[in-house]
Image (cartoon, rainbow, N blue to C red; front, side, top):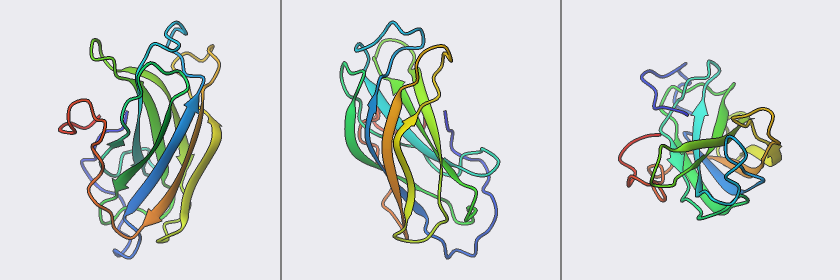
Length: 171
């Protein structure tokens, strides 16, 4: 999972867009790490931007959880604000699907890493149309993710909607 950064990457002079808005549409074919939980989990998605070195460059945003779903539809936007000085190129967004069951630790259900296009305000940043997800157990069939993103000059603070702990702690 992505964690907030302790330091920031290369300076860009402050002219690049600092907000990525990811629209998370849906996911199909989710299953638990051992394949036995299909339809019995409450998936949510976290998003964070990582730099060329794979380190998180900003806070993590999240969708709400969807009850009892192996093919959830979120149709939600997640905003991730990048710090001043973040690199202009070589960025990726990591979308991670986890299970929020309120009983045990959050189960990692899968993730997809999408390379981001150069940072230009109003420009398309990323598209994942049925992208295969990396699954915890490589022998299980891959779930698929649909999402898209746009760059914005500035954004409101990252959404905390759907965070089980009220948004007070990063994931």
